[in-house]
Length: 110
Length: 116
Image (cartoon, rainbow over all chains, first blue to last red; front, top):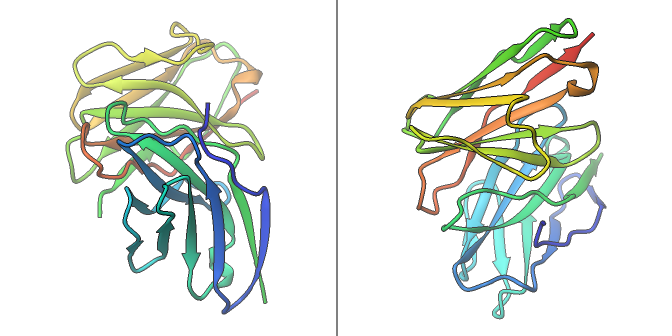
């Protein structure tokens, strides 16, 4: 079973920051938080991942709370092309596999 | 970045025939590959884990004789849907990674299978 909880949908105005929350209250010490997104009829695209520190790359920032029970993916300046389903996934290095939850459908509007 | 290629992107077949889908890691060696299926407006469901040189591990409820997986090399895994029926119509997606690291899994672009 997926170990994460996300809101089913969110809206964001183009140019604004999109903040997507994820709850993973049962995460264990060796599990990473990964974020992917899926645009309609394509394979999931990797965005970012982290263990306990905040991370930033060219696509997004990942903020992980100190107790690691939740995280937020931040798209700093959302564009229409960021409209997609965003998945927050907890992954253990021991098993490698990713179990997808239901994700958040982000709609960016003009 | 790491690229996973999946082929074909779309296939239509008649009921009772078999269909093979290929998944290749183009610029890295994938010790482990994963196969997912996705129904419309639903999330990805893990079907099986494919390990190079050994038998695949199937998730509960997935028929291993129906969905044959072969991972003959570090860059290629295949999924064969045998004796396909209309209920097998779905979006099939593979992913690949180097096992035991935090390197992200990368996904193919999926195969849309339609069984008529």
